[in-house]
Length: 358
Image (tube, rainbow, N blue to C red; front, side, top):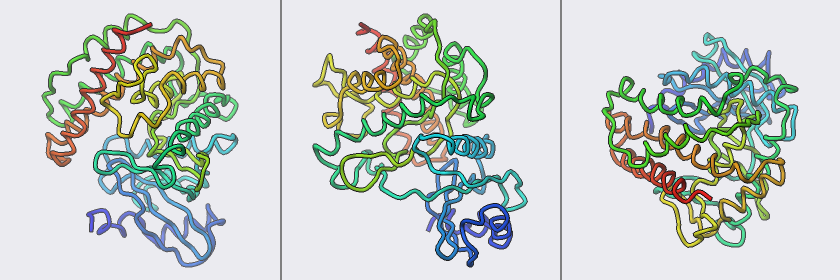
């Protein structure tokens, strides 16, 4: 039994939470409240809430939250609530609470989404049958891009998210943002860093090739198959995009660059990139999905390669924190080695993509 499971009572004070639910989420029902741990991650904990016939989930930071986790939960609640006005596949947010006196931290209550989600185990992503084999696997990324197209086409100001991200110059700020993120691991974890071949070349290229025109929209920020829920049975149909911790306002084409980062390049279809956690031969190529995205959003395919490089740079800088945490003893050594190889592949593939730029 995990430490989080041992401290379940500390994560959800049943009497106080019941009183709050009565006032703010009456649709959950009036029966005795039962809670259970659904997921216990590093930055968020997800609990099930059951009352009679009603069932929902609660998302909150862990008992000892990492920096920014409490604000991140409230940002997620805000964007999910705003998306309730749209057709974007997402869990409906029923209510949020910024008062830590209720259960010890901010939290929100959302729909318990039915369906299945790919899961990561033994270093690979696994799908539920029949989506674990062709031809059903092939439709999964297209279903996800349908969701990204819907998200990119949302008028974020019309749904109340005009101040959700910093105004303007999103792409100009990106390199400094992720360079700073990488540098922060020294102070946060005492991490001295390591040689990252391809990092310097990628940073220099991104600074020299910022796109002149910037489109503004909602960015999910962490698009991957494990962050998606699908309907049972073929064909692949997206129910909800989950885990909005990294969402912001900026150029949403970054999401398609991020999502396709481990897929094959149609110019070298037999080459599989080192960052993939799935069988890329069963997925479409990067360009095929990018064209599908551009057809739905009206974007220019010529910009796709810039976003691919930027996404790999962002991914490498972000995931190096797992290496830093492992070095500091906060994560198992094998976890650190797993992410260390992915980070190296991110910068190596980014640099290789720059050299082959059309």
